[in-house]
Length: 312
Image 1 (cartoon, rainbow, N blue to C red):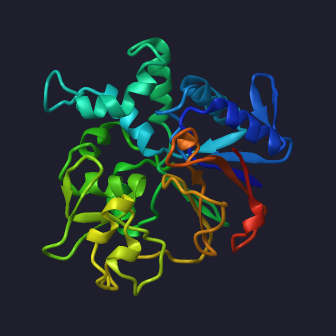
Image 2 (image 1 turned 30 degrees about the vertical axis):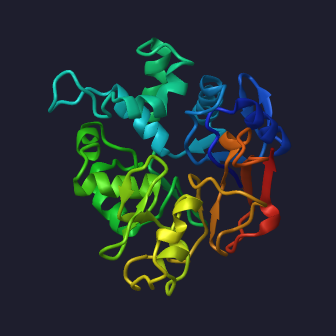
C-alpha cells in the first residue's frame, strides 16, 4: 500500500514529522516502513529553508525502494536551468533571466551552483517519471490530460521518463511539445472568449486562465478560473463549451499536487485528490496554517476524506 505526499518545497522538518506520523522510521540512512511505500508528487525545492535536506531524504528513500516519485515543474525547471541550449551557444534551456533567477534563487542560495552535489541532485531530478500508473490509481504532478500525454509519449522512455535527447524540444516555447509538458506539470490553460482578459499579479495582461479541469462540464469561465481574487471579476460568467475542459475518465483515483489548496484537506471529486496544501505559504499573511499533506491509500476505488493526514 502507498502513502502519497504532496509538494514539500524545501520544508524538511515538516516532512520528517509527517513521515513519523505515517509510521515511518529512519534506519540505515533512510526513512522506511515495514509494509508501506511513499509516492512523492514532485516540487521538492524552491521557497523553503531546507531544500537540499528535503531532496536527500526523498532521493535516499527512492534509491532504497522505500518510495517512488514523479517530476514536478520545479524539478523540470531546475534541470533545464543547468542544460546548455544547443541552438543558442552560451545560453541554457531555461534562460538565466532575472525572472527565472528570482523563481529559483532560494534553491541556488542553499547549494553551490555547478558543484558535485548540485549536479547529483539535478541528474536525479532528470530521472523522475512524468507520471505513474498502477492498477488501482494514477499519479501526476498537475493534470492528467490525455491529449498532452499522447503528444509527449514519443519523448518518454518505457518508465515515463524524459529521454535525454528530448529536453531541448520540451523546453522550446511555442511548440506543441512545450505546451503539452506545461499542461501536465502546471495545469490546463483555456483561452477566454474574444475581448476578455485580466491583469495578473505582475501586471501582465492575460487572455487565458488556469482552469479547475477536474470540475464537471456546464460551468462558466469564472467558475473554473484559478486567478488572483482581485482579477476574478474580470473573468466572464459565460458558459465554457463542453469540449474545452476534458475532465477525467473516472475509472480509477488520481492524485495530483501543485495547486496550493487551503482549508481542510478533502477530495476534489470522488476520484481526484490534490495533496498540495500550501506548506510553503504557511508563514505568509495570505495563507495561515499551511499543511504538508498525505493520503493513505488502502485500495479504495473512491477517495475518502478520512485518509488525508497532515502536519501544519
